[in-house]
Image 1: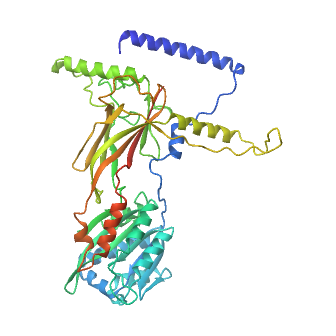
Image 2: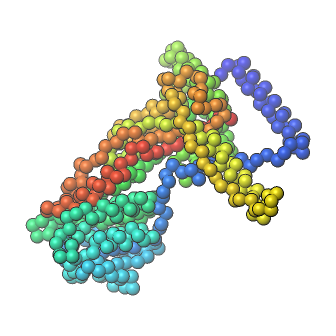
Image 3: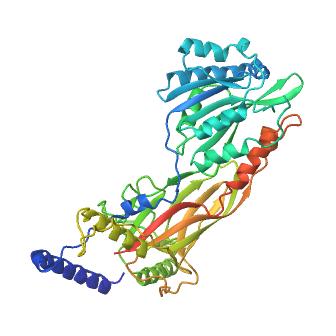
Length: 481
């Protein structure tokens, strides 16, 4: 920014402070201002993930069918189960325990810790047939608790035939629809001459708190299982920002200030921050979009024109906002290939929500109109977001299951705002999965045994239903102030 612009900006700041002082000293001349809802309050009521499962308590279901006993002939598998039982017995989140066999689910919560431990660990207790697996899945998905299910998923029909239909798909879908996650720990074993699997299945919440307890129970053991995550939320987000009060924008190498968009990073509530409980950030830019665009062009030109040995104090501009990474390594069901940035003008909806909050704050249920009729309770009427084309684009990359997230001006943007946006209006920039492929590479080996593909088909159908194309991974709220 030139010295002339700095002087102009200082003059505007002085005039703004002076005007604010006059307004405060003469506030009796003006009507009371409306309450302004913070971006955090707005974001909390407009989350990018609409459904989350927050349950903490869990139940444990154990299949006591006679075929399961072969799995425990493997010493490592037995050790994993032993450690797991000890862990759940010590967990404050353990609620109930159930045994499965003889086409019945039996509540065994009344057993003492020692009795429960011995029942699960002692192979002599695995003598039943026809564990009601579908009935158990129905109980889990209709209930309010998380669950650990230990079974081989071999379901039988009423005439004692092996079930080959994809009976588990509806229940997997139901759990994911609730906002939960599903994790399989797959232990291989042989039942006589048939290769089979013991499945330790975790029906978890949105934060995978139960799976964390399971993983803790397995610490220190050599693992003989394969893990498979079913769902589209198994990714992690990390940031490489300069400090807790600094965002992913461009900073002066010396003063560490944002000298492109002049983002407010003073640590106060209305400055840049990560929005609590959301995969989102707020950027209050201190310049108009045209000024920022011109500043970017000037910054790039200056860097190119400066000899390489004199560039230490200059910004090597790569993006408007970046330095965020999304790791898809645990997203076993899908291969994410392309991301995009979708820009919306959300100002009208913010105004509508702000009006609703003000009306609700001032609402008096006893107040009546001129006809003596009580005034209706305020209702929030949301306003559809307006898409803003040809302004900002995704310019990051995806490599080795990791996405480097960054956004920049579209090549089509010339500094003139599209008709869908005016200065000082708030926009939401959503980072969205635009292309991904289903990853079937492991499901045949993990979920198929003998001639039974019931579980494999169930997993396959669930993967197809929850393919995350169009899923919003992250959101930037940006406003010029």
